[in-house]
Length: 541
Image (cartoon, rainbow, N blue to C red; front, side, top):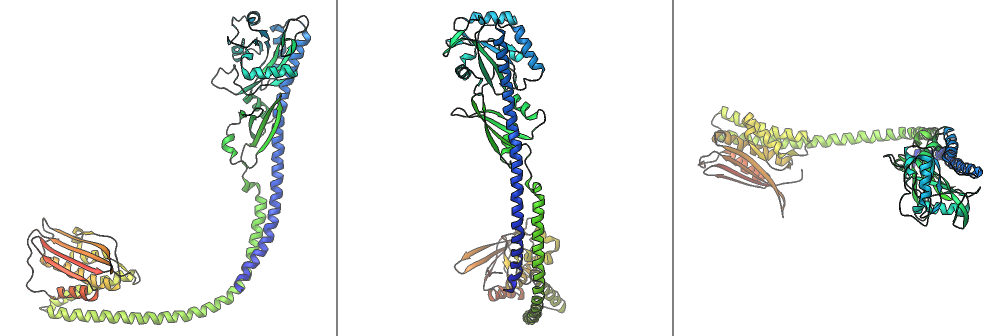
């Protein structure tokens, strides 16, 4: 129970501090969202105000033409329209114009007006239309875009026709669904819309009966480029740092009217998204607003995070203080236990060293006796005995590096070959999988490899021209477990006869393989050299 006291102290104090931090964080989030909603409402209001301001210009133009009472001429219309344009009132509007209402077959009326007003020989287009036609006969200011639209029969297009019929029915400014303006003749195209207001015939002017209304001369209208309209609304008089997407949702299938550049890319990472709906000339626009620059929440709430960090640090310091007192007492107890355990481990290590030294001495004495019996003189004994002791030392060294756990077969082979052949060991081909040997296998095979290499150096001509020396091995799994199958091949290119008698080295190999490792050893002398096969069981190292 005592070990949990610091944790309980930390949890209790941290919970209080984090609860307070959470309350402050939520307060900051609410405040920031409210601030963004105010910013978004400002952007939406600007778009609404901009469209209403431009619609008021349509009403003003309608009043100007209706009050004149005389025939509509370009000079008067141009003077009025340019006055609006020069005052910068047309932001978002491509221009302001008048479309004459005529019946099909009376297109010459519009053709004459275009010739008289603009000295332009252009037929009403497109050629096919409805029973009534509304060709554009006035459009100012006259630029390349607007000139391209003169003579266009807007009543031939279903979207524009719907807006004009609604306008004639309500006698109010009516906006169309999103369309591509005929003025869009350059590579930089924008989606747009149009707004219409019917002009009744007056002052002796003749008009047409249209949609239940008598004597309509035509429609005062304005084409809008949605991109320019939104840009003007969001940047004048000062920029609003938001991105918007405006969709016309009046009909069953919503249509995109405008989307700020990068809106789609940044919408997924935006902290807030505000959606508002406004009425524009009888059409419903849904405007979605996000931050132009995504908020970095970590920096936005740094004060709150600082408070949370301080509360956690305080909780941690309190817990550490409690824990240090408990730990001091625990450290004394563990030190006593560790001292007792160290003494036991030392005794065990001494016993193990005594056992290993005893086995090594017994093996050295056996090798000494057998080597002495097989040696002709002291020099031969010294050389053979020293080489065999070195083989044992090499195996011992490999085991020592792995803390007596295991030794790698390839490393053991290469070490013994280098001891016997020196740099010539690099000419021996070694191939086989990674195999780990235990202590018994390392000592035994180390001596075996040493004896085989010594015999190869003394009696074989394997390194002469045409000779081949290779050691390959593999592992196989059988009913009795895993086994190591090793092939030692010395190909000299000539027949090697079996010796009449075998010395101590051969008896040592058989004793190590058959006795210590319970394996099999086979050596064949044939027409091409010497072939040795070794098969021993593998134990987990």
